[in-house]
Amino acid sequence: MSVASKLAAGTPALLLILVGLAWWVAPEFVTAQFGMTLQRGAGLSTQIGDLASFFITLGVCILIALVSGERVWLYPSIMLLAFAIGGRFIAWLFHGAALTASVIVVEFVLIGLLLFMLKNLQKKQA
Image 1 (cartoon, rainbow, N blue to C red):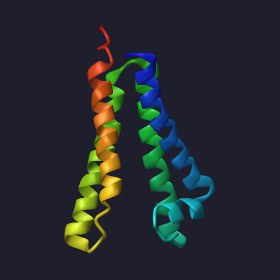
Image 2 (image 1 turned 120 degrees about the vertical axis):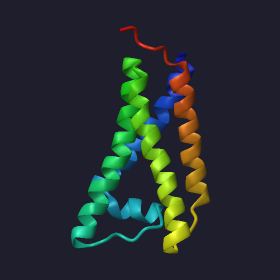
Image 3 (image 1 turned 90 degrees about the horizontal axis):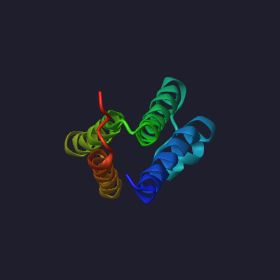
């Protein structure tokens, strides 16, 4: 994989990690960016803990794949994004949530980037 391709994949990975860290240090800011309301009590704990872990895991798995060259690290990120898209459609179809098409498009683009990486990272020899 070329240096340019690695930079193209590494930049979103770092941004995802930054969003996750922002959940820990500035949840008020992140909720405003996402059009969300900051919860209280157990909801706040779930919101910060789960959303931070989602974004940090996405980014870290991508970076591990880039650094190690092991394609298997891309699968967790692909699955997290795919399940998030599915969850957005379920929320829209069955629970009255807004259809966040722009977010879904970004997630599909990220999946496309990860599939490109999956194809272009060399398989590790056993």
